[in-house]
Image (cartoon, rainbow, N blue to C red; front, side, top):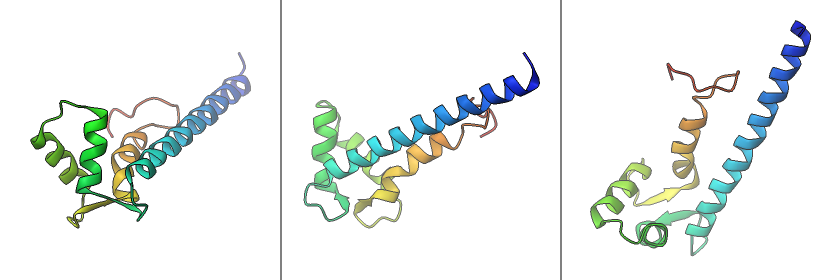
Length: 105
């Protein structure tokens, strides 16, 4: 294959990866919206507990508390969409331009 063909293939793969990441971001955002039961653009501890228990019936109170604290970065007692997306964005930021996980990041 020529260098041009390899570059085109690489660009096409990167575009597909970017589309997949965007679809997952939208799905993750929708998960936040579903958890925000009263539609005030934040997930309270009570709302979070319901979501976690729906997802994992056997999750311990301690695990719920730790998960909530990990997401509630500012300690406000509620999780904003930006806080909710932090773990997702940290995960996808480790993807390099060639579509592989960056071993350094």
